[in-house]
Image (cartoon, rainbow, N blue to C red; front, side, top):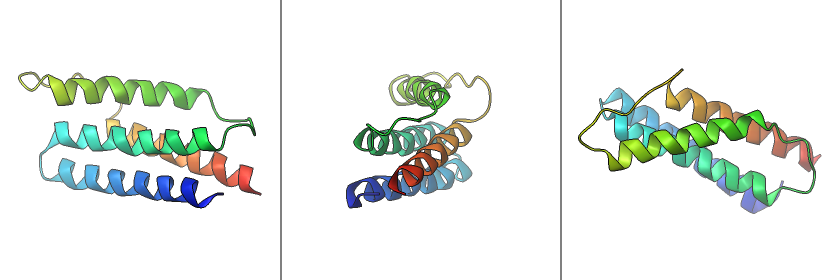
Length: 108
């Protein structure tokens, strides 16, 4: 795994940690935004590692859902974000976990 990919995955984990802190303090919209960016940085890491194949396409749906939730959380400040399915932090964590596994397998 390249230094850049590792740095992006580290940033992903930092954003997920920030999302957990914000969520526990009652800042749900801000937590969604940080969770999305955690997944976003992991997606960037995955794109840097492309060419090896084998990335789970189902994870793309997680990123799209997080983008939509983040959009509502960041730009619809008068409304509660529409949460369908499980929580955004869990979705972002699954996405980052998947990218880390995938990138780690490609580095071997």
